[in-house]
Structures are given as C-alpha cells and as structure tokens.
Length: 118
Picture: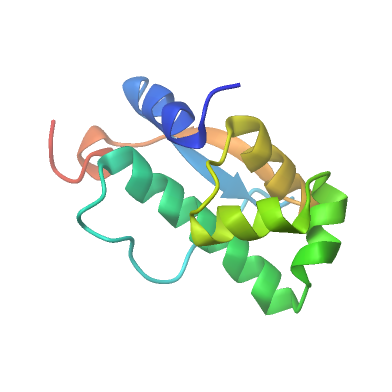
C-alpha cells in the first residue's frame, strides 16, 4: 500500500487533490497552515491530517475509541496525528471512514494545486 504522500503525489499528477468529504459531499477543512519547509506532498498530508485530527477533537472523541473503529492501535493513530508514524493510503481511508467521511480525488486547477507553479 502506498504512503499518503505517494497517494497525494499520484493524484497531483492527474491534477487532482485528495479531499476528505462529509456524507453530503462537503469537504472537511483543516485549521492552520502546514510548515512551509515541507515538500508539497507532505504539506498536503499535513492539511489532511489536521482536518481529521480537528474533527476528532471537536467531537471530544478519545484517540483510543476512534482507533478501535479504524482498526488500529491508539499508538498508531496518535502517531499519525503527531506525524511520528507514516500514514498509508489505506490508513488514511480507514481514519476518514472511522469519522464517517469519505476520501475523494477532486479535480483542481494546477495553479491552486501546486501553489502557483504550472
């Protein structure tokens, strides 16, 4: 299974963005910005992780409870949130599904996708 940054890079190749979506199709957004010293793929993963972590915290859901739903240990889920464990594409889908969300590859403008680089 590819890593989440590899999935993001693959989607970008096709001018798509990995997007976490609510059941009604509305994208889940993150709060804050990723560190600018990260490569593009890692910034995108940081954006996605921020959105998923924010949803868990907003709901008051303990890590152990969400981890059980996702089929991973609380240590793994906590590591994904902190960026200390490598998030796979499958892990990303399980995490989103555990919160009741889907994962889509949505078409975006290349200028938006790569921050002004065409």
